Length: 589
Image (cartoon, rainbow, N blue to C red):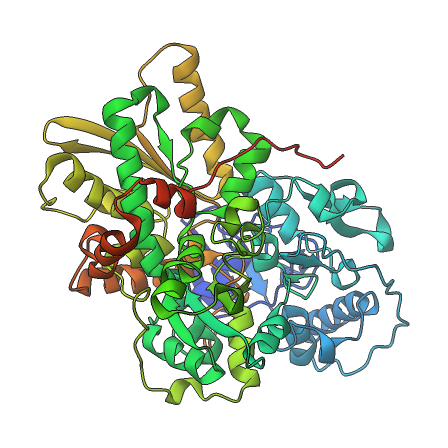
């Protein structure tokens, strides 16, 4: 432990703690721009300067020392911070009124905090063309403050290496490696760059106008679905605490917006489990050489697999994601049931994820209904903007229910939104399919939490099933290499079943989730581990309180099979609910 003084407050913290972190222990919030809890400090912006025994240092990257006397704010420090901000603003466009991040921008917030209404410096900003080539995320280098957060996340956490620095000095900007379009790069559209960007330099590809046009067309029948993770994040846009589950209010808001039917992606999650657990049991019993089986719900992970890990394609579950299953059934099963022309149906999904925008057009399998199964995928942030544009008082809404038949779900469907949830849900049902009995303890606490790789061994009546859960793409490589090593050495596989989610914490921390800072919460805006845990808890609590916590006991899913699909893994189920994968080049030629 190290003792020091910060603004005359005595502080004792572990050795290695930064001055910035130590200051927060005594409720002193040193302003930052480039620093984010998820990434190592780059010391790029210089906003967080402090005086240490008379010397000016950057607090984000300076460890505490015994006997230090730190001053975090005085007239000289404030003047330096203002000057640094003015320098940054001189190379930033004055487009706040038309920027999607206005009101949610850390640079704008700092400019307001320091009372900068005009700059003494001439504008040096260069206008670069927008890169919207992925149709999932949009890169506007003109708004980049070169904080480096996105590069750190993309390279060192996600291990994708789609983004890098280009040029030097004032001309430095962040772009796809080599200055090519993002769509031609290794980018997997996970959106973690957007989730960590402090300004409007990287944002979601906005498609709200497309949905407004559908809602305003009397000849179109609109169906909307919401993903598990949306319900525990949407409230942050309206002043609720992190992780509060607002499923019913979200349904009500969607009805006010004018959607004809409100369904739930959780229904698709239950359906995914029926198909995926059946697939796993078939492999486990009759085709063990195809193990381990890997989950396929995360589109960024699918993109990564097809680009980076061609040798693992045989191990991938063929199940589509819940979003895609609901879309396919809305234009077939539901359309037939209600005698609606599927050509007039438009399915809109509300997702925590930017990669879902890519998923709905990834291959011809995404049109298994005869039409594009999901027409538009909006992020949680886009839905929040639509609710605000419509003048809906979200907090005053009474909770409502989803519509039938694609709205009923179990607790197992809900936990799809957090790391370990898909695996837990699948094991509950796989155990039943193997033994014919219900699992007594259906909670797998050993695969909850934020450890990057989680492992467990499940005893199914004397048969051991080894599982792994990896979240954050950077952790996947280690798991895959263990599988490759066992293959190469002719050894027993280390796992039978592997869950992968591209984003740390799972979908609760997807690239399309809110970046809102609640009053009294420490900066920066955006996702942190504390927020990840609170959002996950909101889903886990719903599962714990659910009347039904097993996907195979979802009565609406049972009816679907009885009336339409026949059985899990049937020919019709494969036509509508399954997909295939093809090796693709890392870079487009």
